[in-house]
Structure formats: structure tokens, C-alpha cells
Image (cartoon, rainbow, N blue to C red):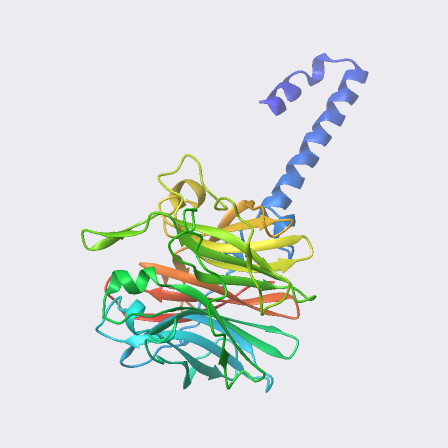
Amino acid sequence: MKFIEISAGFNKSSIAKRCLNLKTYSLILGILVSCVSVVFGQTSEITNTGSALSDRFMPVPLNSGFQMPGFETWCGSVIKGEDGRYYMFASRWPTGKSYSWVLDSEVVLASSDNPVGPYQFEDVVLPKRGTRYWDGMCAHNPTIHKYKDTYLLYYTGTTYTERNYPTSWANKRIGLATATSVRGPWKRMDAPILEPRPGRWDNQITSNAAPCVMPDGKVFLVYKSTKTGHWADGHFDFDLRLGVAVADNYAGPYKHVSEEPILTFTGTKNSNAEDAYLWHEKDGYHMLCKVFDAGTPLIGEDDGGIHAVSKDGINWKLADNPKGYSRTIVWADGRKESVWKLERAQLLIEDGVITHAIFAIINNKGGKMHNIVVPVRQ
């Protein structure tokens, strides 16, 4: 409307007014050009553009990722090894046992000559080791990182004496295993690195570790917990939330610093969130995480991923364009597919640059669980 008003009054104005209108027109045009640049510009600085992180995801190679005959695979996390090859740590459990991951999952290692894959199975890294251990009956949610010459494998562990899903789920805790080679041997810590807090918002579990290991060794750890998780009518009724813990070094101790959950969404059905991944750039801390019913008002779809930012790693807010990833993916052959589940987002960061994203995927309800690797545009 302002353009119409300016144009309509141009011949009725004095020369001075014409000049003023021309300046106004130029100013508005400049603002519009600037806005278009913000919306469509592609740079490596995520927070300096109006584009979403999800816009940087490229078509998915058809043979990418990792899967195994006879097993469901989940939770892929990739790192470049000391030999220059790429290694994926993932969860697996026998096909046909559906969501028995909390009873049967173990962490395995697979490798590839390139970051996309396909990855080939190499070894079981964290197998079952007996009910006397806090993590003796299940290892899940691996996420691999490195500090100096030490590889850091964070994971979720649990134990049980009887095959009981609710009990095993409620016993979930975050653990850490370390090694000086990506192939191991791996040394697990004797106890969980983070416990729930009785009577608080995180009094049920600690799981889904998302560490950011800083150059000075300090670790910011985003974790998942719940206050009200309980088994009812054949499923869990819970409110899944995210919190932050901090340690001066990877060995701990890890201290809770979130008095309340981070990223509680107002005006949505619920604030359930999980599967965080945390990293640091020169402008601060960044996080990807999955949202449930809050997804549609935030990013246009439920069960997609949001992008959040923080200056201090403790206090978080949504990015200007918070769409972190979508369940609708494009394959390298041009097909577009809206998959049933796309979860456990992890990033491969080399020399400070995000090069690939790794996801656990189920294409159709009831389909096989596996992992894909997605190239990321710079």
C-alpha cells in the first residue's frame, strides 16, 4: 500500500516532495532487497541468516548409512578415526522384538571409507554384561565424541533381573566409556555419570545424552528426563523434558544446573522433547532436538526437529527460524518421502564445519529400523 500511495502522489508534489518520495522509495526498496537476502541467503553462519538449518540438508544417497540383516539398528553417531576412516556407533537389537530395545539393545561399531557409507559391521562395543552392573542388560543411545587423544562414548544403560519393560525403562541412566582408539578397547565408568533428582522435574530417569565437549575440557550435557513417567494401559504416560548438566572435564562430576526444564513450549499441546544434539559455534551453542505434539505450531509438523540457540549453554531459546529438520526427505533419485519416524539426529563436524547429519529412520509404520547419512550444504 505504501508503494501505491507514493506513486499516486508523485505528480502532485513539489520537487522537494518528489525528492523526498524518491528517497523514501529507495529506502523501502533497499529494505525489501535486504529482507529477501535474509530469507534466501545461504551461508555457513546459521544464526546470521533467516534460513532454517533444515534447508541445508541435501538429497539422501540411496546406499547411505547402516543396517544389518536380522537386526533393527538405531542411534547412529559418526566420527573420523585416527586411521582416516569413518566409524559409526549404533544401537542394535534382534528384528521381530519391536521396541524391546530397552531389554536387548547393545552398542555396535561399523565402518566406511567415506562419511556417507554404506557402513559395514565390525564389532559389538558395549554388549550385555550381567545384571550386577547398572548398565549390564542394555546399552543404547550412543553418541561419539573426542577430547584430545581420548574417544568419549556416551550412552544410556539399564539393568533388570526379570524381563520387565517398565522396570528396565525406569532404570535408565547415562554412562560413559572411553578409549584411546576408535576401535577400543573401551573402559566403562563404574557408575552412571548423572542420576535423577528425587522430587524434582527429573526424578525418573537420565537418558539421551547430548554432550558438547569444549576445547578446555569442560562439558555441557543436555539430557532427557521426566517427572511423571509411569506405566498405564500398556504404554508410558510421561512428560519428556530436557535439562542441562555441566562438568569441568569428561570424567565428572556432572552437576545439574537446570532448576526447571529447558525449552518448555507455551501455547502447544505439550512440551515433550527428546533426542538432543549439542554443538558450539563462534556465536554460541546450538541444539537440535525432536519435538512431539508441539511440532506443528513451531515448525509445521509433529515429530520433526527444532533448532535452538544459547549464549551460555544453559539458557536456551528457539532460533529465529527454528525448523531443524523435517520428516519429509528427498532421496538422491529425486523421490520425496514423508517417513514415519526420523529421530536421533547427530552431526558429523570436521574442522569446525558441519558436513553430514545422521538419523535413525523408519520409512513406514512397522517398517525396518535403520540409519541414514545426509550430506549438509555449507
